[in-house]
Every structure is written in C-alpha cells, then in structure tokens.
Image (cartoon, rainbow, N blue to C red; front, side, top):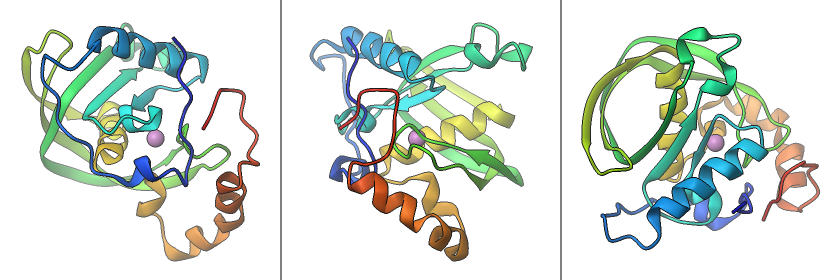
Length: 181
Ligand code: NI
C-alpha cells in the first residue's frame, strides 16, 4: 500500500521515534508498504516518521542506483531500532535530498564511517561497520528517528537561502509527483 509522505512542517518529523518489538502490529505489511512508497517516490531511503509513524524503522534501497554504483547491486535493507554507536573517518560534504523536503538539495557534512547495531526484518541482530555512501544514507535516515532533518546540518547562510522554499512546503504548495501530507 502506498502511504502519504509527510512533508516538512508536520510535527511527527520533529519527534524522537520510539523503539518497537516483534509484537508491533502488521510489521511485515508496514515494511512492504514503506518499500513500495519509497519506490514510487523514487527514493533510496525512507524512515517511518516520514509516513507519520514515530517508530524506529528505516528502509533503504541502493539497488536502484546500482547502474552507477555496482557495489550496491541487490542492497535492500530494513533496519529496526538502529543505534549508531560511533562515527569516525573524514568529514565529507555530499549533496542530499529528502522526500520530506521536495525541491531542496544541499551539501551536507557527515562522517564517512559508522559503527551500527540494528535488527533486521526477522529481528536478527546485526553489528556492522559501514563506510562511504551507505554510511551517509543510514545517517540521513537515522536523523529522521531523532527528529532531525538534513537541513539542520547546513550553514545559517544556506539555510537563509532556502527559507522561501521551506515556506512553500509548509504552505502545501511544493510540487511533488508522489502522495503527500
Ligand atoms: Ni530524508
């Protein structure tokens, strides 16, 4: 089922999301719906708060960019209750966008390597060190679980420059090819 994507200005995007357990209702259907919603919006990552649910669940699909980056062939993941234990490596600036911030793209500084634990769809635990672009995508989605957005990391000057675009989004006037709230 395709879910509406909550846009900048919706309070759920600023809440710290709660962990879930195996008893969370209809979890496998929810994960399937999040993948479907992300695909039809041409996204590579989606966090549950972007669908209005303040829970610690992320889906990622880098397979869709595997023509450019073959190392990501088949890389589709659901991460439940992820915890970033540490971030290190170089600080890199790479352009990011977000389905909750249509029309905005900014270079965002992030560390190049993270140590993360999470549960997969079967609630099996994982403990991984992840580098490069996947580390960036996970940090972006993890921010959503903490009530943060990528624009929180940009300079006051850049923030000023996108102010009118943010107002357009909060007024419900941003153009989007996917279903939004
Ligand atoms: Ni996002």
